[in-house]
Every structure is written in structure tokens, then in C-alpha cells.
Image (cartoon, rainbow, N blue to C red; front, side, top):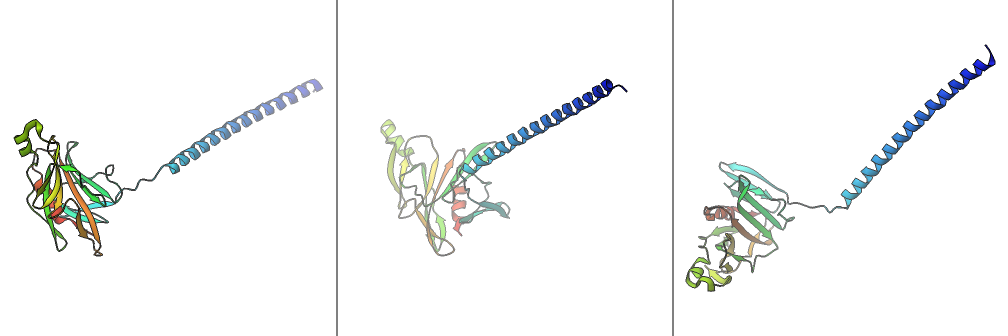
Length: 232
């Protein structure tokens, strides 16, 4: 075979090997770039996640204690109710505020709030439910009528927006005007602050409030929750 053909074939083979090597190097380079991009994205994502504050939601659970009542409890308290309550994790704040609600067809009918170390004093309400604490148990009296109705009926437009009132020795602020349906529990001889003792005999101040968005009377449901409420 002439040297010309031999050298030509050798050159072509060498050229093909160089071309294949370039393809392999290019492919490896692309994989390296993709891997670096993925690693950078994961690093950025983990960095942003760790920089966000951790929101601690109150730990609560519920279980049936016999039809039709259910027990609702957290590490701090428990109560019983025939109402199908749900805990609002968006509105609740740590272990200082627990917000329960009942809804039907995505419409909130009732809201029930339990506050620890945060007083409702000075907040106007439309209803007050007097109570006493007897041997660690809550005993309620009849809930008031809508406190501002008589004042508006007597004074009309000249009626004040709010007014200090008393019912069964409970001091509270009445929301005279408006269409809200807000209420609170009040200690006979005191105000919104209610002192109960936990299982370690330590005094704890609790406030209770509710909102009624339904057309039905809420007193029975509020009474049921309060009279079964105990600290743990």
C-alpha cells in the first residue's frame, strides 16, 4: 500500500478520535454546568428557608367523650362541646391565644377565643355572661340581652358609641351602636379577667370572648364551653 493512502487513513482515524473526544468533553462540560446550577439552586433554597422565622402554633387535639360531645384540649386546658369546633392556626398565637370557630359551607358561624396573659379589659362587647369560680369550676349565670338596644331605643342617634356598664356585679364596656355580635365572660365582682388554677395549683388569668355571625342564639354553646373548661 502506498504511503499516501496509509497516512490518509491514519489521519482520518485520528481526526475521528479527536472529534469524538471533543463531543465527550462537551457533554461532560454540559453535565458539570447543570450539576453546578442544581447545587446552587438547592443552596439558595435552603438558605432562604433557614432565614425565615419559625412560627410555633399551639398544639391542640380533640376526641369524642361520648355522643354528641367532643373533648378539645391543649397542653394548657381542655373543654367539652357538642359544637364541631376547629382551631384556627392562622389566628391563634403560640400558647397565649387560641381561636376556635365553627363553619358551615365555608361560612364562619361562631368564633370562640381563649386568651392567656392578655386582658380584654377596655374592649367593648354586646353581651356579657357573668360567672363565678367555685372550687376550681366555672358556673355561669344567664347571659345579658344585647346591652346597647335599650340605650339606642331611648336616645336614638344621640346614644354614645360605648358605655361603661355592670351586670350582676360584672364591670364591662358596652358596644352601644353597631351591628356586631360580640360577647365575653365576666367574673362577678370583677371584669373580664378570670383566675383559675392549673393542675399544679398555680393561678392563671384567662379571658373568654366570642363572636356570633349566625342568626341563632349562642348563649347555650358559650355556657357549655365555659362550664366544662378546666386548666391542665
